[in-house]
Image 1 (spheres, rainbow, N blue to C red):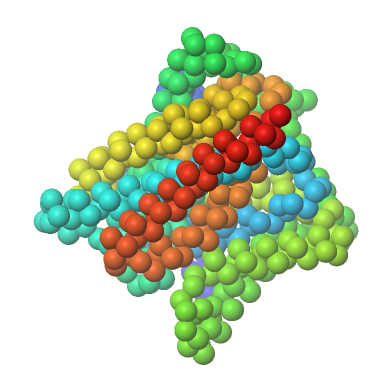
Image 2 (cartoon, rainbow, N blue to C red; image 1 turned 60 degrees about the horizontal axis):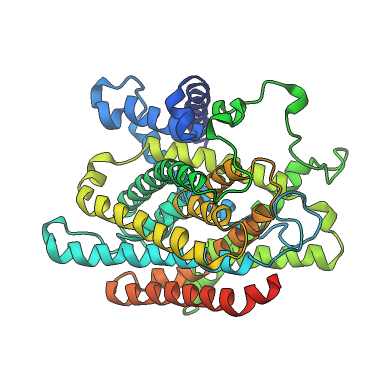
Length: 465
């Protein structure tokens, strides 16, 4: 990398950082953003999009160079590798604090099955929409990957919008940027609808006395709405210092592990491609990164080095990457290309919300044996936004987190995320065959939902005693 290229990279990060800071201040000042709990990264990204050259052309308030915008569109696909690679690190080591510690697992399985089933139901619905509109409106010339964005946006949020861009770009498919834009749109729609409809469901459940420890949404802490904590004594400490600074900073140590695994996955894929090894050479780096990190995590446990890993510090680093990815993805959104698919997208989003409601809020409420609504609303938030949306809605129902729901929910989310990433590979291989990919994803959805019903009927009631 030349000094000019490095300077351009610093300038690009500076712009993204500036947009993120603007997003923080707007969230703190504008009630509309506070009521929707929009992340600062989403707000900042849209500020860059609305005031930038993509929408305003030559009259842009923020004259971001076109080369910068091209790089912005690449950033989510690049950062998705360390984000995904970090998922297994620290899981099951038994030393972490927070929501996924503990051994109570009575409801982990049905929550995991419902979450996974809902994710693959969204995949199936997305590809079904693509099949129908390819026949009904052939003039749109819908690209083969259309439909993946529904699940990746709703279930994965803005952070995984870069995943589809990375996958399609690696396959040298020219529509990767449009697909990434559709995924960003899907994530935005899911996030907003998850909050709005989640609040509606909570108010309805409150009138029916279905919530045991309800907090009035208006009584949520002001710092949660505004996005900052003014009282220093109330500010939560980020993490444990697992290493001594005389050797290595604890954050640097965790980051080094994540990037080491990313590097190994790059080298491994390069080796496999250089030697033209069938099948294995076609697997993406992020899939190998998950497998390698699982091995690294096992080694830490095997060597009694679990004390070196802290989930909170790992999460803080990946959250940083996600925030910058979101700003970059939204600020570089190819609006004109995405709007071409406005009709099938709108239909897909409406049907997607209906599917999530039926699976989570209807079926889920019948399967859970305790804290039914609390478990369902957490899964609803997860399946339309991100895990933090689920936690936010759950906190309204359980402000002091006195129930075991958060623990079960967090474990089920981690398991569902890793399984979805693993099953994404065969989905990608079937992209040219819409019928086969629809059958595969629908089959996984059906299997998970049937398994959830069986577990609830024969195992969960028995374990509840």
